[in-house]
Length: 72
Image (tube, rainbow, N blue to C red; front, side):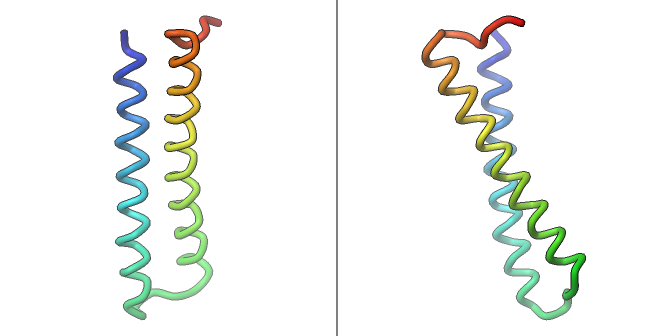
């Protein structure tokens, strides 16, 4: 029942993170930001987007095969 909602939240979170990565990249190109902190922040944002979308697609694949996530 909640699985569909959780999947949607992962998807929306991943899309939001991708949008944030794109706008953050454009902001970084302004020249006002530089250094190791910028690079670390950039890669953490990209990782967040990839993990959220990866979890979404993994959960979608599992639920499409079994109809629901396995119970632990």
